[in-house]
Image 1 (cartoon, rainbow, N blue to C red):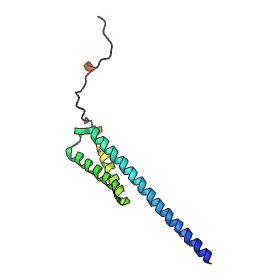
Image 2: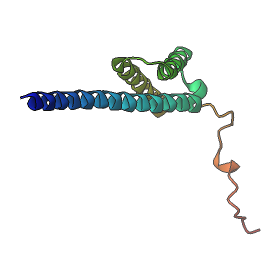
Image 3: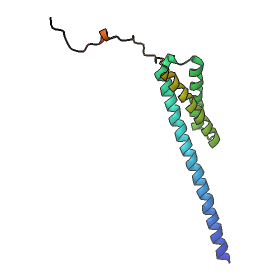
Amino acid sequence: MDQVGEVDRMIAGEGRNQDEDDLRGGLVDARNELGAVADQVERRVNELGSAIAPPDKEHAGQLVVDARQSLLEEVPLDRLWSLTSELRQVLQGLSTTAATGQQPSGGGEERTDDDIDTGFTTPE
C-alpha cells in the first residue's frame, strides 16, 4: 500500500506542476500581448500626432506608461488583461480618429495635380 500512496502523491504533484506551468504560460502570453498592444498604441499616437485631442493623447500615453511599468513588475494576470483591454479600446478609438478623415500631422502642404511631376511634356 505504501507504493500506491507514493504514486498518488507523485500524480498529484505532477498535476500541481502542470497548473503552475499553465499559469506561468498564461502570464507570459498576457505580458507579451500587453507589450505588443502598448507598442501599437504608441506607434499610432505618433502617426496621428495633432489629429488626436490632447486629453485622448494624454490618456493613451498614460496607459502606455502603466503597461510598461506593469511589465517591469510582477502584477497579477487580471491587471495585465485589464490594461490590454483598455489599450485595445484606445487603439480602436485611434483607428476611428484616422478613419474620420482627420489628417495625421505631417508638416506638409496638401498637394494638387499641378504639383505632381509626371515626367511627361506637352508638344509645342
